[in-house]
Structure formats: C-alpha cells, structure tokens
Amino acid sequence: MISPMTIPAGFLEELEAAFAPGELIVDPEAMEPFGRDETEDLFFPPEVVVRPRTREGVSTLLGLASRHRVPVTPRGGGTGLSGGALPVEGGVVLALDRLDRIVEIDEADMVAVVEPGVITQVLQEAVEARGLFYPPDPASRGSCTLGGNLAENAGGPRAVKYGVTADWVLGLEVVLADGSVIRTGGACRKDVTGYDLTRLFVGSEGTLGVITEATLRLVPYPPARALLLAAFATMRDGLEAVLGVFREVTPSVCEFLEGAALAAAAEHLSRPLPAPGAEAYVFLEVDGMEEAEVETRLLRVGGVLEAGRASEVLVAQNPRQTEELWALRRATGEAVKGLSTYKEEDCVVPRSRIVELVEGVKEIAGRHGITTLCYGHAGDGNIHVNILRMGASDRVWHEELPGVIEEIFRLTVSLGGTITGEHGVGYTQRRYLPIGVGPRELEVLRSLKVALDPLGILNPSKVLP
Image (cartoon, rainbow, N blue to C red; front, side):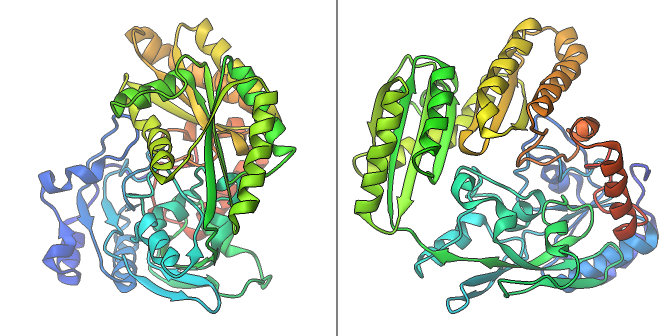
C-alpha cells in the first residue's frame, strides 16, 4: 500500500513544468476543500491539487504519477457520500471540474458528447431546450458533475422508470493509470465488439481509469407530468401501497419518506408540512407525452393509494405546488443530516422486500438504542438508512456502531439485496464489501484492478478491502 505524504521533489518540479500556475495548487489553505466531500466529517489533506483543462493534461499527470508512483485521487463535484473522492493516501487530487465542455448535442443521433466536469443539471437544461431528455437525476444534480455520476453510476428518483447512469452511456474516453488513452463504444446503439469496457469503467469509482469524455444517449423530452404526495398512518401501509402502484403503472418517480424525515425537511425550509402527523409518505410522479395520458395514469395511481389505506392524497395543481413538493423532497437529505451527527447507509433490495428491510432496520436500531430515519427510492428498492447519533454515548457510536451497520447489511443481503445501490463503496463501505460480494467475485475484482492499475496509484484505499 502507498504510504501517505509520498510526493518526491522531482515530481513536483515536473508538475510545475507541465502545468500552468492556475492548474496547480500547493497552498494548504487553498487545498483544504479538496480533502472533504459530503461524507460525514471525514478529512484527508491532499499534498497537491491539479486542475487540468484538457484530456492531454490528465494524461500527462497520470504518466508522471505512474513513473514516480504517486497516488492520484480523481474528483468531480465533491458531492459523494462514500468518501470516494477523498485522498486517503495523500498524493494528488485530480480535480476534473475544468473539463466542463458540452462538446456536442447531436439531435439526429440523439446523443450528447460531454466532458466530466459538466454539471448534471447544466446538461439536462441544455438538451431540454432542444426538446430532448437526459433522465438521470441525482439529488445533487445542481452541483454534482457528470464525471462523478459516471464514476459512481449515480441513480436518483427517476431511476425507477429510466434506469441509472450506466443505462445512458454509449461510449467513453478513458485515461488509464499509465497515462495512455483508450476509447470504448461510441454513438452506435448496438455494439458487442469484444468485452463491454464501457460498463466496466462506469461505476468503477476512479479506481481503474479516469473518464475524460462520455457519449450519452438522449430521448424525446416528456412534457406532461403530474405529482402527488400520499400520507399513511403506518410505514407498512405506505410501503405495501407502493407494490400496488407497480401492478397498475410504472411511475417516473416513486419515493418513500419516513414521516419524521419529511417533517425535518419542512422545518428546514420553514414551510408547513403537508398532511401532518403521518408516519410515512409516498411521493409519486407520472410523466408522458400527452396530458390526457398522464391524467389517466395519475387517477389510477391515486385509486391504488387510497385503496392501500392512504389517509390523504394531495395532487399538485400547478407548477408552483409541484416545485414546492419537489423542494421538500430535495431538502430531505440535508435536513435529516442537520439533526445530528450521522452515518448514511445505501441499502437496496428487491421492491417486494422493502417492508422487511425497513422493519428489520428499526428492530436492529431499537435493540441497540440507536435512532434511524429511512427514506429513498422505494420504486427500485433503494432505501437510505440514516443513522443519527442524537444522544448515543461515545461507546455506542464508536464501538458498537460498526457492528450495527454490519447487521443491517447482512439483513439486506439476506433479503436478496446488497450494500449500496447508488452511493458506491468508496472509502467508508470497503470494510463491508465481503458481505455483498463473494470470495471468488472479490478475486475477480482484484484481478481487474491489478490489470488496469498494476502500481495501485489510482484512488487507493477505495472499494476493495
């Protein structure tokens, strides 16, 4: 393993010769933000930050780092939730925010070619202006980058209908650990020429190569959409109602929120809580090309929810009400994390097992005297389990908590699920990877890492335990 603080003087001299002053940061105060992301309160200081403007700059950096055996941690918008962009082993943070061009929006072939530093929402708005749609929508879409989305295979609320980031990637340009450049896929909708390297790099968390360009699939923008919020007296009622919805329609969004989580969001925004007093809420959207089609589907969904013992079903009547409800959902994560020191686990199970997952989490947490708040993407079985310290003692929080998390993950796997659906393994979950991946599968993962990064310089201390 590479030891922290490993940058030799000769390497720094070569960096200074290769990069303009604005592309190189060595001042500790200026580098401080690059040692953090949105993962709890972790901090690992980089020794140098490089912010190239071109693929050639990325290639130059990795070639030098490989020759000097210096660790390199790729970084996008810093919005990750598993410590994937933290320079745990010191070395260089490779910040990709300046590779931020939308190279092309091809309306004929319905693809977009982008660099990794493009903000997700910027691309969405650019293609929507042309009547096109790029559906992946992580909660941080206004600040996260497409490169980070690709590295983590990000999901989001619309994944239930449209899939995750990998489902929209046709091709990549990737700089390997030694500085060489490869291309995978392209604008073709079919390609079985050799192994699917595109899928290999998407979700690899910057441990196998650095993505410097992506070709993304687009579809026509669905202009009609309708949103509702249903309140339930119990979490079981709400989660079981979700199953009923999917026997009737496939919504574009189907979110579950524990009552206290939505209440925290309303308080955070200083807004009244819709349908107060509920133990659970289901946040549901349908979309389509025609208003009449969407209205018909919404009526069917509302009927299912009412039959499923919803105490109240609120339908957004205009764009303002729609935005107000979305604002509550988007604020939930930040609001819950503002309640206490926290850890967030990203469990995913088959949709039919969500009730067992949430009830099992509550049982485990109650047995250990720990507070949890659950919310997330019920439509695809992805529930975010937020563990709040609240009044827990140092002993419980520091000594017992890893065992509690392991219990939650073992429960998740026993239900046919796994330990992360969209946040990635990164740094914080790597110790738990053997719970979700078998020994032989782990060997295959290690062999891929060795084949593509034999010196172990790319994002070390991530993913693999």
